[in-house]
Length: 273
Image (cartoon, rainbow, N blue to C red; front, side, top):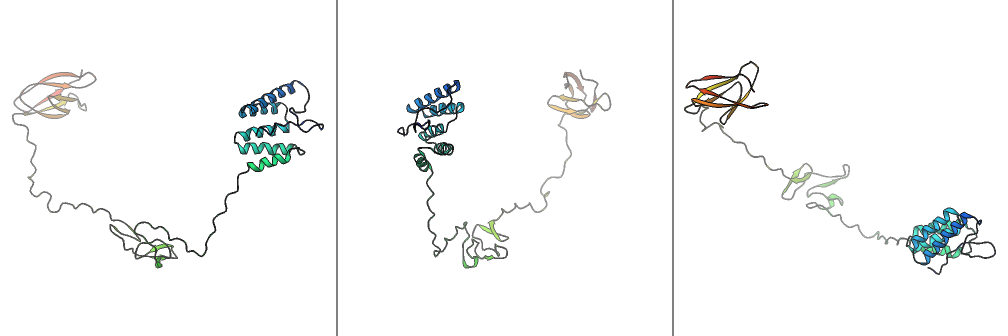
């Protein structure tokens, strides 16, 4: 590809030159510098660098020939679409391009090949039968559709109609086959209270007496803990006679004591510390 030299069109005196014919000024000098750098990068195989330099020169001094140079660099990078775009812009802006035939040949080589023709269709061969789900099949009654055994094809409804003859372990559900739902567990029959003792009232532990705890003021409720038993006033605990520690939780929990007599009694919780 390097045999295709970089083109820049000059005047009518010659067909090919190395630099564009533009006014000699400072901007032109900068464009020439970018063009020279792009040509050096192209010859060194740095095609991306060449594109950057050619585009910088194009921004300063546009020239149709720069499209051709950039197209060559894109073609070397395998970017067929970008190369073709630059070649077309070159031919559009330079109607009398001396290398038009060569550029058109490049465009033709970059075009993607046409897709292969579709295989011929044999209308005489019957279409292959459909692949039916497990348990379904095609028959004369189903008119080429997959249905359960014992069903026919309904043209008006366009469905498989009739109660199906379902293979195990499926069962008919309407006009289809599905797994039968698991049977519900059977309820206990007979008298549910037979053989059970009659209701017995709560019996306090032996050797204990009932002690009622209540707040000092009506409407107040304190939680208390005596040993391993806890309740919220007003409540009742069964305690053995003797002295017991009573814990009253709160913002600052405190402990007091109470003495349970040998008979039922009441303990008033006055306050919490």
